Structures are given as structure tokens and as C-alpha cells.
Image 1: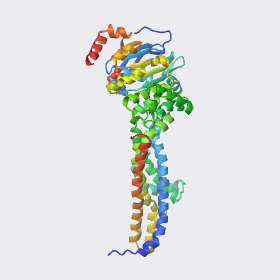
Image 2: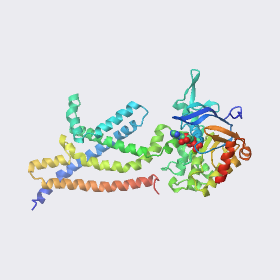
Image 3: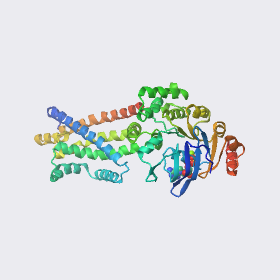
Image 4: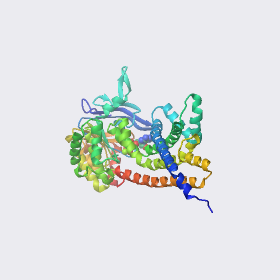
Length: 263
Length: 223
Ligand SMILES: Nc1ncnc2c1ncn2[C@@H]1O[C@H](COP(=O)(O)OP(=O)(O)O)[C@@H](O)[C@H]1O
Ligand SMILES: [Mg+2]
């Protein structure tokens, strides 16, 4: 189990187990993420990386264990001295702290880039349309898509869609941002423009970022810490230089050499 | 040769045109009821409450498996036995509205199911509530694929309005029957009724297709 890294972690997974029927996807996985930390999650396909993010986004329910944000249980609430499954109000309150970008963007196709970015702020945060639009335009400018604000997703390239999706997530002012293989559905030539947007995001927007990625070079360059997941457990976690330069686990070593060979 | 009399045709035309208005009104009202009740049926089948889902599911199945004309008779002649006495129009609108609601609910369901799961997940990630998720994100995307089916049933309900004649709703068919039994002339009357249906159905179908294309563009779902 990785040692605690801050007095109050921003995100804590405490012996989290996720099963689908007999299939154990996460096996008593524990992991802490410090405020403002940029974490890269790497590991073989099917090892449970996406599941970690989906549990954090409350898209799935934990089978066992506790996830907490700022020390508060995410999907549980105190009841009669113990913990009971959280009700809707609790979930909605906790979700305000978390945002997510998906592999396939999941933009709303019937809305323009700008409308995608103001929907949540207006409908959920209760922002005025003027304010939401001003902030969304700032974010679209930040991702380099000011002039595409009026376009529907069908008219955007994959890289542009993913940048809109990042702007849309940021528009909700999350404290924790989850990025699930945001470049793996993209053509190689547009991956760089999306990575460029992610670089420095945690500092600029005061975010804690958990990024699942296969871009090892990028992970090494920008992460504070890299977590290697193997068969639903944290096999190894550490500074990028250590994980990529001198992994202690044989499995990490094997995975990295296989990935580097594949290019 | 056919014994076609133009003078008779022109003589009864005004009555038929007037009845056409009733037919259009019956189709429009019935369809309006079907649109709303169909949505209720469809959403009821998606709630977490098993009993609600089961009742909606079985009602839809039941209505879809029995003939419309039987349902019309039932509402008009059997409901009074339970103390519910309805005019032909009211009974007819309830019967045909519910009948088409059950078909439309299936169209809605298909539309809702065509929206990718990722759209729901994006709504959760943006913390949108259930109602907003449905009405701002899911329904606008479920509508375009549902439109062809909805259009078919609009034409369908229009063509089924003659069944209302069995309980005395004064639509086209009922009027044509009345003319026939007064004059013993059927050729001109029924031919004109057929033409009137054709004259409305064909442009309506073409208009609906144009509307579908427009909606897809307006929703940004095609370039
Ligand atoms: N809804 C589900 N039902 C059943 N099995 C699932 C479901 N979601 C994911 N899995 C399984 O869980 C395992 C881990 O999936 P995932 O977290 O997506 O892996 P990764 O992102 O590391 O590739 C896989 O074997 C996958 O097939
Ligand atoms: Mg994955």
C-alpha cells in the first residue's frame, strides 16, 4: 500500500473493490492523491484504470471500500454511527467537485461548442447566461478554439472536440479533473494539440488531476507521480523518473518495455 | 360504363369538405393525446419503480394486441356500465388517442435507446439533474430518430379516423355513409372520400420528410 502523502489527501481510495459478477476489476485498491497533484495512471488494458475514474465520477458504484474527497466519503454518508449509501443530494453535492473528460468526448451533438460549455454553468451552477458565456469564451480561447464557439461538434475534428470537452469540464470549476485516455481516439497528428492544453492545467486552475494515459513520454514529462495499475491493484507508484527510469517491480518493467517496443 | 354523375358529385362535395374538417380535427386531437400519453407510457417504463414500469409495459402490450375498433366500442358502450357516459367524440378521442399512444411510446422508447450511454454519463459528469438531462440533452437527440416513426403514425391515425364512424362521430366516412343511405349513390361519394384522403396523406407525408431533414439540420446532427 502506498504511504500517505499529505495530511489531508484530496482524493483517497481506501481498499476499494469493484466486482462485476465474479470478475474482480479492482481488488482492495488503495491510493492517495494530494491537492494539486498531477497523477498519471498507467497499466495494461483491462487492468481497471478506467474503472477507477468511473468510480470517482460516481458513474459506477463501489462493491466495497471507501472513496473520499477532502476526507468526506464520496458515495457514502454517516448514518447511525456507520456508513450508508449516499442519497441523491449528497452525490450531487460531491459531484460539484469532480469533472471528467472521456475517451470519446461525449459532447452534446445538438449544441454548439459554446452551448456545450455554458449548459452546466447555467443549469447547474445557476450562472447568468452573460457570465457563463464570458467564462466559456475564455476557456475556449485557452484551448485555442475561440473561433469555433458557434460550431456544432459534427463540424469539429477529434482534437478540437476533445479540447471543447476539456473546456466544458473546466467550466464547471471542478477541483478534481479526471482524464480517461483523452488522446487515444485521436489521429496521431492532433494528439499534440490536446496534450498542450493539459500541460500545466493543474497549476493554472488549481486542480487535482488523475489522468489515465498511454502517452508514456507525456506522462513522464508532466506528472508529479505515476501510478502503475496491474490486475486491479497499485503495483507501483512513484516519481516519473523512478517509474520510467528504475522501476522496482518486474511487472512494471515488463509493461514499460512492451509499451516502448510497440512505440 | 360507369354511371358517374358530375352534378351529384358537386352537390355532395360541400358536405364532404365539411366532414373533412372533422376528420382532420379528430386526427389532430387524437394525435395530440397520443403524443402526450405516449411520452408518459415511455417514461413510465424507464423509472426505477418496478410496479410502474410493469403497469406501463402491460398496458402498452394490451392496447397494441387488440383491435382499435374494439377499443372504440369498448370505451363507448362498456364504460357507461361503470357509470362513465361519454359522447361519441370524447369516447372516440380517448380510444384512438390511447391506441396511438401505445404505438408512439414504442417509437419514443426506440429514440431514447438510440442515445449513446456516453451522453448520460456526460450529464452525470456535469452534474445535471434528471429532468434537465432528459429535456435538454436526451430528448432533443432522441427526437430526430423518432420522427419518421412519429410521422408514420400521424398519417396512420388520419387513415384510422373512419373507424370512429362506428360510434357516430361525424367524420368523412360517417358522412359518406349517410349520403349513401339517403341517395343510394355510392360511386361518386366513396371515390371523392378516397381522393380527399389521398390529397391530404400524400402532401403530409412529403411535408413530414422535409420536416425531419430540417430538424436534423437545426439540431446540428447533420452538416
Ligand atoms: N460494465 C461492465 N461489466 C462487466 N465488466 C466490465 C464492465 N466495465 C468494465 N468491465 C471489465 O473490467 C475490466 C477493467 O476495465 P477498465 O477499467 O475499463 O480497464 P482499463 O481502463 O484499464 O483498460 C475489464 O476486464 C472490463 O472488461
Ligand atoms: Mg480504459
